[in-house]
Amino acid sequence: MFEAVAFYLFAFLTIAMFYITVTTKQALYALTALAAGMIFISAFFFILGADFLGVVQIIVYTGAVMALYAFGMMFFDTTREVKEKQGNKYIIVGLATLAAILVVVIFAAPMVSENIVALYPAMEGVGNTQMVGVVLFTKYLIPFEVAAIMLLVAMVAGIVLAGKKMDISLTLMSSDEIKENEEKNKKVLS
Amino acid sequence: MMEIGLNHYLVLSVILFCIGLVGVMRRKNLLLLFFATEILLNSVNIAFAAISHYYGDLTGQMFAFFVIAIAASEVAVGLGLLIVWYKRHNSIDLDAMTSMRG
Image 1 (cartoon, rainbow over the protein chains, first blue to last red):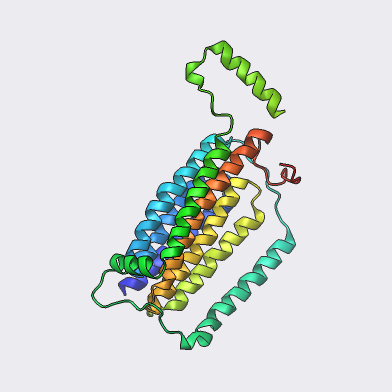
Image 2 (cartoon, each protein chain N blue to C red):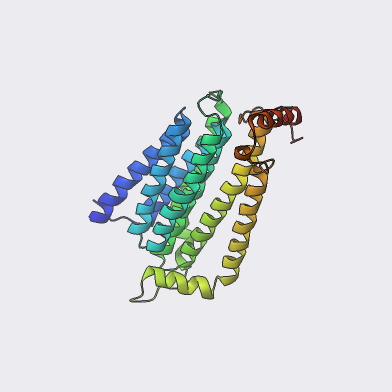
């Protein structure tokens, strides 16, 4: 009973939040709605007993990813609206077809998957976090390391991409030098 | 009220995936395009966690972790590229991005 109420409540909230994200015209509303939706999704993980995943969802998504997006929004001129063309009929028809196919596949999937056995069955009396640690560091150690390297590469690439021409310190320059620099940058950029 | 089963979660995941697809298809602002891809990745994560729970198997949760890692690195690289683009063209409109000269 409690599970059903929680599921329907959070399902409604998540769908509403993500709907706002894809339809609103204000970038700030989209960002806050997306962050709220991420938090509500972590509730599903807690209901499903995947405690560690829920905590990671809150920390990584609403902590790190949303902070990055907020930084991006400060950087870009988001007060100016980007014009969005509306009403392409083919997109709507295609999306509706795709959605219908997906729902049919979802309902057909349990019939096909009757003979699935658990590869790493959950142990009795062991917490989720402990279990995740055991499986992650025994069976999935190499993918874990590869993911770590991928994150490092992405971080370095992000810094290199965003930090171009940031090797000068504006606080240590006089105003004349800053103006000179700006003109030089304008020439380079145009 | 009936018991919540695997199909409930899968249907929720499909609904969220379709919302994300709509966002990817009709958004012209690149930042909001990224938001829509986050929705896609999250809907898949829900499906992974639900399957993991109902089959008593931890592989689904592992895959969800790796999906989260990929999403994080995607944001880092994507935002860097977006900043470079914004510095050059002073706009993040998708329709302005028709040439691949960089």
